[in-house]
Image (cartoon, rainbow, N blue to C red; front, top):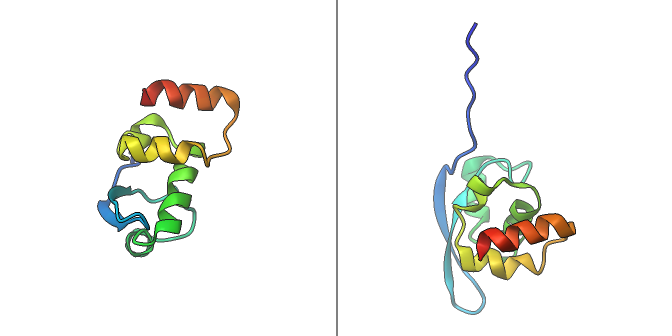
Length: 97
């Protein structure tokens, strides 16, 4: 019996305008935030507070192929807000440098 695996991938990309006026494009990846469906998540990611929480959650739990889909400068900005263990923080800092 064959087993099919579905790898996590971006369903779409959505744009958010931050309070500073800067526009960022973030991937819509189901599973980063637990409960929303992809369609609902895309709408939710138009709010800056949700985008920051979503990115921080991704920094805490997601693998590098998922994080590589986010804008690098946005990940670096959110890295300071994420509660990470020291080894994960060093690894992400290295990958983002």
